[in-house]
Length: 148
Image (cartoon, rainbow, N blue to C red; front, top):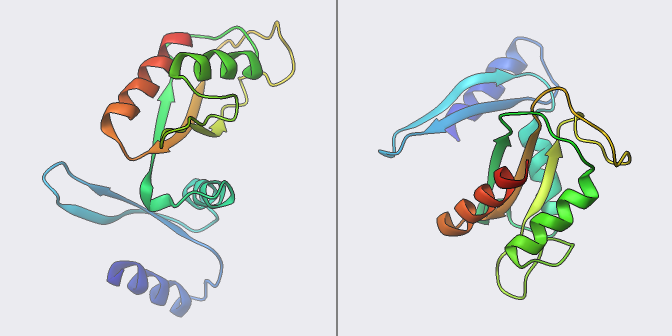
């Protein structure tokens, strides 16, 4: 928080009064690098947080996975979503009777939302939120990548 507050103060002194985001990393050993990149705009992290809050989820209790296919994909999002939900035992809203859920936050524009015969020429990227649970996250990753 001190790092972000310092960056905010520096930006104000320099005359910038708009939104900004900061990319940081936490190592497996627990070392925090709080600011490795400064984005002077609304960044994707802010949009992801708003999507989680809008879905009634606490961003602190969620994990976001960025998954990218190794090859092109042929198909539409709705059909794909139904297949993934079925594989994971979720309803088509991406929820189960337990604490498991899956929420698509961002899908690359290469993924068709309305053309069943759409074929991507490049890999597809999707951001999916779920509970902060390593076993569940691995199941989601395997299910998603196994269908793309």
